[in-house]
Length: 478
Image (cartoon, rainbow, N blue to C red; front, top):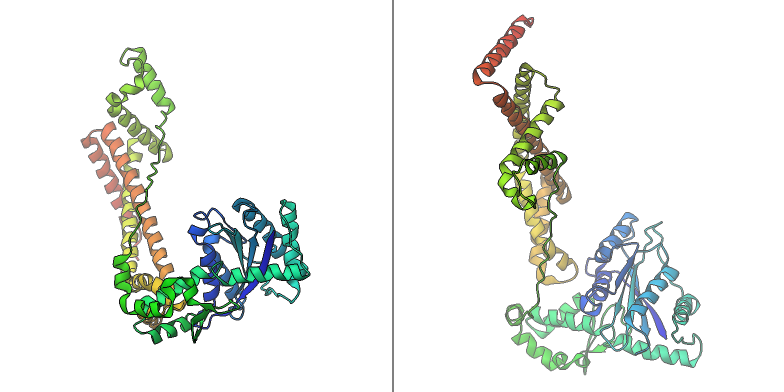
């Protein structure tokens, strides 16, 4: 038996529209509840980038405000089904009800006696930008009937959609949903964060309100987060969350003590070593070893004696590279080889000049790159502040000042990042050209050194220079 419930996420009131959507996605993807992410799935998006992709869809269609998304919970009867079956049912439900129009992320939580699944999907379709519309009666007409059908197909019991029994089951589920079943961990996490950052009880209440909670401080301290139907008394979350205990914790706890008291559990670190296969011999190497073996230079199991012939192997590789150089440039005479060296020298000078230009261009932008590095270091604090955590207001203000500095110089943060990538690619390209021409030049000089003596080479080089000077003299003067 599975009971379905649908909720919506409102627009954030703290200046960041998708704060409640982001919190919902973060909550359902907690590794401790999903077997370290094994029970997580997504449709039309990537699970680890679901919020970013949903936000991009909203921005592309200009629909950032109002309802941000929807949250469906499928709750199953205790001890009736395993987590893998719930995962399969949830995936089939997403395919049947949401279809291929909305980015969706879903997860199964098996950390409680009642295995349940969460489905969070975008309010805006990435196909045509139309918003999802939930009408009264859709639960009885579509959502629960699909849930009943899938449960029946997997051999599970179903619930009645009409009648007193259905109302009773829904009431029981609602009590679980508004209690520790779904909201408890999230409320405790926010209470802990506000306690650590507050100096007085009044500032604690104000910070809770800034996070989107409705606070009722009467006989009992109670809170109601966005999407929750009723207030939750804080003392029911545990002994550490009664009003008296919260007041004590505000005095005794802060960020410094939290960091000092936090103990990390020991964990096993796995180290994966990539294994490389032994390089195979080329055809000419095989013939070379075969010849050595036939004349008695090698014993059996010759591969174990290869280290004795590493110098010969290096020489073979060198000769092969030299031959490919001659073939590549169609060199047939020493004069042509000398001419090639001259051409390569000219190219080398040209590439070094190009390299100098690229590095000078990069040097002019170093101040912009330094600002971008500072902004990158502050980005996490800026995003956290936009989610409603005012503790990082200083980082947010610094980020905005740096952004304004860039704007005065005619750039945006994204443009500077693109410019940095562009210069990096240019430097890589010109370095590759320099390395290639230096390699060609070294090979050509090695061939000259091996095939002729220095005197002959010098004579040819002198003749080439004289011919070049004569050609320059014959050119008409301008």
